[in-house]
Image (cartoon, rainbow, N blue to C red):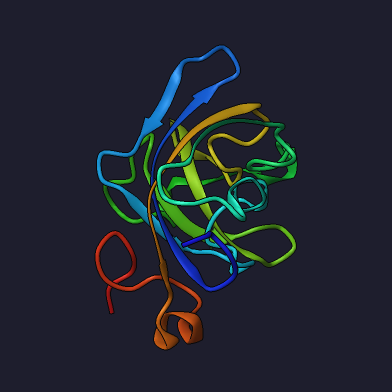
Length: 158
């Protein structure tokens, strides 16, 4: 079966930085609903469209095509008293950007009574290399299409 809109693609992947340093390797296969549902990066969907089980590729994506350029306006410093107890460097918190959008913030530093947060994706601003191996392709079920994501093994569970 070819990868096209409304197919479920299961793949193994590795992500490295521009120098080849491994950033992440999938221990378990990952499945996503193909066809513009924003379940993976658009350039990955583009590279996999029309391919079949067994296809392997290496992609190099610019920051703009991966997780975006860094946005320094997403760096914030807030009083430590505004955080739950136990806040730690490396932790993640849900919050709002200066323009009111919801975002995930990474705790960069805690210095005295202040906490420094970064709302950028940790890989923002980086050229990334993706090693992709398609291990299965199947037709999506109606419920997956309606919910806009994969259910079951390697996907989302309700």
